Image (cartoon, rainbow, N blue to C red; front, side, top):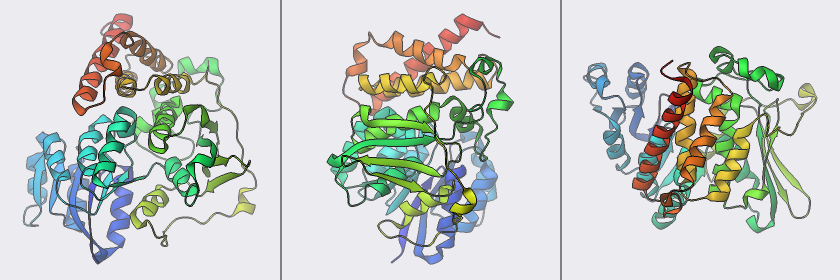
Length: 392
């Protein structure tokens, strides 16, 4: 039986790996929608190969280029954020949500309401609006499958288990570019240094988030929202080898660890083939060759993002939306050279403190309120940055 699939964020790392696996499945899949950002050449290449019903670029200025690239293929083209949301309304059996950042929430929320399977790689959807997303999926009978490697690992470790028997969940972090730097040197970290990961090549933004552990901070919140566990039971450890993706500890003292190569095709393929397991083109580990696995506790003084994530989980409400927006604004400022590496966490903390007195933060989560909070948090982050550094 042919499955109808849509891939949102098809030109990013997760999206490209998803396209590869879907293409390998041949006639088993019929692609409904592909969406990308400004990389129109890659989006057009994918569309020519998979022949979706529609290809959408988020960049409205790239519509003409996409139309020209797909002329004669029969593939419908569109552009803009609203066009992406409209594409999410098209019926599909399986949807990959891999758009980076808060922009992935609206199409993901629409897909969650379709009663199909939503493969969720956009962690910001759970961070900013977890209760809303999960409630929407429950009401529609949609199965959400996590595609972050850590959360896929937790999901797999819990198959056949009772969540009530879980004592702790441990997610691992590579430690990023600066894991072996002395803490006092971090203030001198450059953009180029923060953009180079010691283990693998990823996009610039997620690589920097890996170095600051803001990526792991988002994943702590994601774990709480998806699995519904007490934040006190969620831990993070530095694991430089990046082979153990997560561990689940049970009340009898047992630890179930998910071990595998650092290859996102595993988590994607698991979600694509679920509830079955099928062969995937990923490396098979040679444990004797690996020799040892190492772990160490993260210093939350060195990585304040983790402490801030715990504060956000304790507050609940719209604090996740404010946290993510402030983080994205601070990251923009670092990339643009307006603040230093260690200043990003300070900006986020100050934004959260400034928003604690607002009644809106504990209001029921709706999409409009998420966007309003996101907007206000970005404004306040940029005001703080401007006050500290001026235009330069």
